[in-house]
Amino acid sequence: MDHEPERIALVEAYRALLAEGLIVGSAGNVSLRIASGLLITPSAVPAARMGPQDIATVPFDGAADGKPSSEWRFHRDLLVARPDLTAVVHTHSPNATAIAMLRRPIPAAHYMVAIAGGKEIPLAPYATFGTAELSAAICATMARLDACLLANHGVVAAGATLAKAMDLAREVELLAKVYRMALAAGEPVVLPDDEMDRVLEQFRGYGR
Image (cartoon, rainbow, N blue to C red; front, side, top):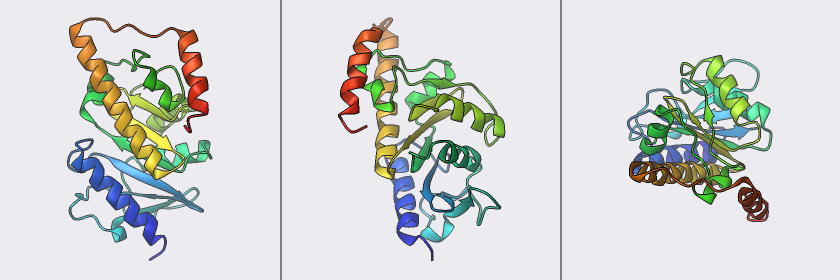
């Protein structure tokens, strides 16, 4: 089986997202770049039954091999648009999805939003799942950033490695959780742009 280590890594990543509560059932997907395209978790296969043989291949140009996730399009388009990225993680993690349902970004109420490369975790506009319109919205929102919320939908996080993409998905969920907690108590104080400029400069040396 071609790319067996990568296939195993994707199955393990998917199971980790389920165990950590970032996805429920088969509602998320994970992809990894290969030379000719990407490998992606399959459509409607529960984590307990998913094996390396279920991982689908989506070429950058041509027909898919297997039954890729219904969200394969934005994974492919984002990896084509961003050659610096190797892995993409999509979840419906509860706190981040709740903020996305309010159609809010996660602002710089905590400096760690800079981990995604900007001064907030932005919100991509709503489009029906699996469509070219959703893919275009994600690619535009993540042109220079590594994560975003999807209005009324969930989260996308990406990285130069699968481990980095997974960690970023976890960080976005944590930021969403504390932001939601702060909103329940009042209006969070957002750090000024000049402070976020300093934070972003420090993060460039931090290994983002």
